[in-house]
Amino acid sequence: MQFVNSKGIWYHGSNKVFEVLEEGSTITQWKQLAEAFSHKPTILAIEDDNSIFHNGREYGYLYIVDEPIEIDVDIYAHPRTTMGKGLEFLTKRKLKVKMVKEIGMPGEEYQKLSAEKIKGYRQSAKNQTNN
Image (cartoon, rainbow, N blue to C red):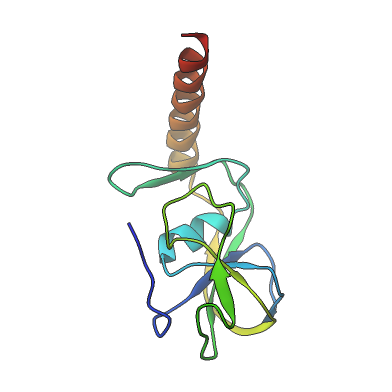
C-alpha cells in the first residue's frame, strides 16, 4: 500500500493533546495507521489485507495537519521505516495540527486479538531463526 499525495490529508496519532506538531514527528496519509500509533505501541504489524495489529495501550487522539505541506520541503520519507514505501513521513519543521477525533483506548477484544497475532509473529520469527 502506498499513499503519497502532498495535497491529501496527513494524519498524526498521539496520546497527548496539543496544537503544534514538533519537528521530527511522524505523519501518514493512512488514517488507521495514525490511529494505531496514537496508542503508542512498541510492536505494530500490518497484515497482507492491510489490517493493523499492535500492543499499544494508551488513550489516543487523531490529528490532521492543518496547513499546506510539500514533500521534501516540509516533510520527507522516513529513512528507517519498517513499513511499506510512502506510509511514514517525518516533519522537517513544526506544523499546525487540529484534533479530529478522540480515539480513546483500544477495545478489549482488539487487545486480545492483537496479543494473539503478535504472539504468532514472535513464534514465527523464532522458528525462522532456529532453522
